[in-house]
Amino acid sequence: MPIKQLSETLINQIAAGEVIERPASAAKELIENALDAGATRIEIATAGGGKTLLRVSDNGCGMGSEELELAVQRHCTSKLDDNLLDIRTLGFRGEALPSIGSVARLTIASRPAGAGHGAEIGVFGGKLQPVKPAAVNQGTMVEVRDLFFATPARLAFMKTERAEAAAISEVVRRMAIAFPGVRFVLSGSDRTTLEFASTGEDRLARIAQVLGRDFRDNAIVIDAEREGARLTGFAGVPTFNRGNSLQQYAYVNGRPVQDKLIWSALRAAYAETIPQGRYPVATLFLDVDPDIVDVNVHPAKSDVRFRDPGMVRGLIIGAIRQALAQDGDRASTTGAGGLMRAFRPEPQRHNGTWSAATSPYRPMDFGSVPTGFGETPQAGLSGLTMPSARMSVPEPETAFAEPADQPHPLGAARAQLHENYIVAQTEDGLVIVDQHAAHERLVFEALRKALNARPIPAQALLIPEIVDLPEEDCDRLISHVDEFSRLGLGIERFGPGAVAIRETPAMLGEMDAVGLVRQLADELAEWDTANGLANRLDYLAATMACHGSVRSGRRLRPEEMNALLRQMEATPGSGQCNHGRPTYIELKLSDIEKLFGRS
Image 1 (tube, rainbow, N blue to C red):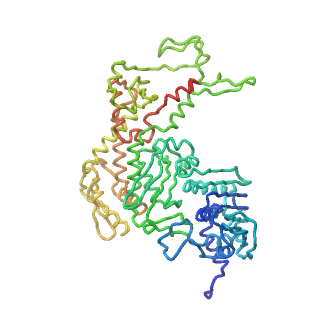
Image 2: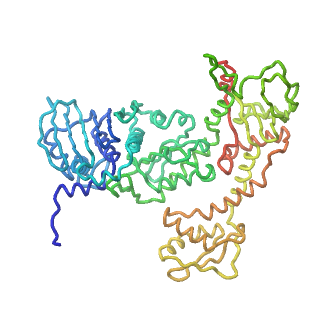
Image 3: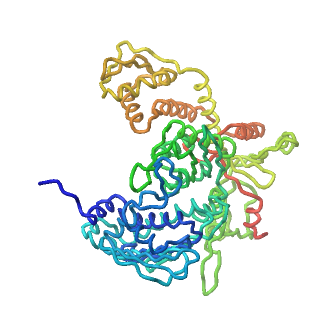
């Protein structure tokens, strides 16, 4: 078959396959155009999950009739000069509008500031409609109907209307976080209205609109700079985590991105602080010189490539860990909220009135109350079974042995419940500490500090293990040989496609050294970092800490309880155990007063 020039419509449809994957992709491109036009109000309307209708209206600078004709032509843009490395706008390729017009019915109506009337142009399945006058407010309205009607095979790959509508909502949320000064309204026949009012320069307020008010109470400020790159944003305390990564947002120069380097660094920053299968909540903004980041990796512009990925990864990990060390050792407010809900009576309706009488947490009937802890429950408690409680109470003079002029965030120990839970009074409330989980974390941090203070002892193998690997994997491993040596793993090159293992960490005893090296090679290929060995050593330290810490069921003296509290205050990461569970729950005095109806 001879070579021939493809038609412009077919070229646009091919481009649409990369740029416009689903209705949410079209929504993203149109919202980016509105933001680049300086809009402060953007309204999005959908029907049929965006497949039937997607309309984006803004109050930006608008376009005249001549610009409208160019806007629907490929590679026509106002956002790029001759320097592809100096990109400071969200859009720049000039492909979105012609791509959408080639597979849908596209109508654009716009009026620039100062113009007496607006203009409208249409592109239906790649066929250009003439420009005509239109009555329209200042700004631009882009309407996309019957998406993929010109390429019906693509419709078979669409998800349900509900799923497509949810994907558009997520696009709006991501954009709203990046631009807190812009008002976003998402509505339509297939959804309830979602509105994000402008919060001006208050970025945390906008993030709270998107992620919920709990995030504001559990967020740690991130602000760090390295080699001209600045990282700002907010990260949740470790005990404020989620079962998926949907509440992780990253932006590079204001552009929402899905970058595996950033997600890898975020995961590493929270290592040993969050349980397996749980994810931190974070919103990160990375500002770098456009010359050191490539946003032209893919037409969708969601992937980026950094000139120095190691610097970016180090900046993210270091900034988050420093912030966690300074302010992350506090209990999340959701823990106190759960405690409040556990104590709050559950109202039930009986004979037209509401009552808490059927709640398992209802107030006691004080007609007959046990005279002391540990006694058998007596009649008169309306069916309430009170478990036997074991409580040791410090003597007042011992509990207050702490100097009065030294503030203690975790307060002074007042009691020990069930030989495992320490109750301490703080200046404005109380905390309940899990003594085993807390001491386990303290022992783990001490062990890890000792390990990091000196090289890990190595044991020499009688017969070196030879591992056959692709040459590029061997190159990556050898480039990290000094790091491995410090951790007790001795490797050296053994020909072009193999490495020899001569030493392994003595702490790990007998181990699958070959499997470990293969794992490290895979990590280096995927993430450009090898944490597998360090993670194994940390896991061993965590196991040792678990078996060597204060066990549940041990009665502590008052001075021991206070000493544990002081150690927790002085140890980074003590707010959660080695498995990521919280070591204490804090309840403010105002919360306690609410339980008793005093506020």
